Amino acid sequence: MEEWKTLLEKEKLTAGDKKLLCSEFMSSEERMQTLIVKYFDVEDFRNVARRRIGTGLIGGKACGLLAARKIIKVNLPEYADVLEPHDSFFIGTDVFLDYLEDSGCRELREKMKIEKEKFQEYEILKYRIRHGKFREEIRRQLRRIVEEYGDTPMIIRSSSFLEDGYGNAFSGKYESIFCTNQGSEEENLEELIRAIRKVYVSTVNPAAIEYRRKRKLLGADEQMGLLVQRVAGTRYDDYYFPVAAGMGCSYNPYKWMEHLNPDAGMLRMVMGLGTRAVERTPGDYPRLVGLDRPQANMRTTIAERHKFSQRHVDVLDLKEGKVAAKLLKDIIPLLDEEKKKLVLSRDTDAEYILAQRRDYRKVYFADCQGFVEREEFVEPMKHILKVLEEAYMRPVDIEFAVSDKGKEGMRINLLQCRPLQKTVSEKISIPEGVESEILFDVRRTSMRRSKTEKLEYIVRVDPQHYYEHPYAEKFQVARVISRINQYFEENDKKAMLLVPGRIGTSSPELGVPVVYADISQFIAICEVAYGKAGYHPDLSYGSHMFQDMVEADVYYGAINENSKTKIYQPRLLKKYPNVFGEMWNGESDLSKIIEVYDVSQGDARLILDEKEGRAVCRLANEEEEIPY
Image (cartoon, rainbow, N blue to C red; front, top):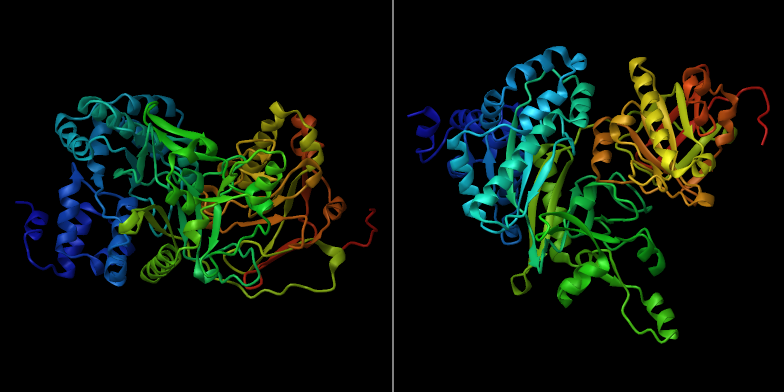
């Protein structure tokens, strides 16, 4: 019998036993091993072994989830009835390696690790991964999952060697695929296998490759385990979704009110599937909750709360077999009155106006207010985040779903946990009395530490000219920003990006439609308000793009047209040479939209004060007068 199997028969394990078991089927990452050795007992290891498909490690995401659940169980026994029981399956990394071998992919993968950026055969590799076959023994084990879950939908999530650990989060870089499980057992098995293939293919997606390249991991032996989970939720006719879901962070980087305590943590919540809480969605706004003052809302009037709320709900469409975004008004009739109270609020002002026209109806909007008002939800979330932060010895973020079981009370389903990168603040000094040299001075903004950064370039997208640019051609702006980003990376330049409205939106009328790989070299990114054209910043805290910025220690802030912005003087940039035309002379049609200012000869600095939530960009003064 293999040694690890013998250890699982023991009544009690030594630290050495636990480490061996951890190395056998959980994680080889030293700090994660330390957590598991500290908290796991023999029954925990047995449960993992029972639910593992194939052999190999279960990977970073699965380990993070299991460690977090155990930490909560040990340190917060009073919340044992609040946390939803866990019943995931884990597909080991050896299944991935055998699949690559049998599909003729191993040599191409090795070639990719050696050639790195020069590797050109991605499409061939993708094709082979997408069309490979699993061994009969693995198919037989996968059938166990289908039998266990029946017609309950499930989600297949990446859980690679490097993922969700202390070093790299890989937020949103690998796929997560939903399976609706609405066919015969054989059809559901084939649906599961297709989903697994899609996650495997995502290991060679451009976003994943760029992420590994930026962190010098292209040569690393990245192996993919998988975490298979029941989808938290309830069936409503042909739809399936939880009443609410979201992400939580034990440290709140967004001080949107003067007296918020960053150490209390924050939540980003949506009605329905949590996909809208971690992705930037056009026209939709999740609910942000500061856990020290949960009912405090950055929107003060009912009209504002309604305007900046959720318009669509992500659900699993069981009939169509996919995730679908449904209009809120189409989902509301499916909810009973108690669930409506948890996630919906009423716009009484709008109702009054309608009543004047003899139109008597209720006007709802989704803001998760009912959850925010309930201590039995807020208090557990606050303590869970804090105890996880203490165990990990650094801030963490989690993903969760939440449901109301009526008389049984509220249930929180913890879906993921990962540590955030630890940063150390520097001593900073913000100069006073030099307003003529300040590009911007903004308050109540986002950052994880105090620091001063010297800037060499400032890239600005002119809001008026961007607005006037034809809609279909706005994507060209994103493409050229990506080229500028690449140039800065190749030449190791420090740059800041100023864009109108939202960064990373998929709707160009709201902002610039880049992905993080297009802006990965910028050390500071600011969303700029421009009311004339309807551009409004909406900092996407908790999204995958935001997590990328946290990992890279990028300043991410907003220049608003309100009291949060004390100074904004873009005219100061005219002191410096705009080098866009000479560096990208083939893009002359965009020269009025994209400005690239070379500030390297001056003393341009970005100064961040974490305590005050203040960000200042100072441009050294010059003798010449700057025209208004």
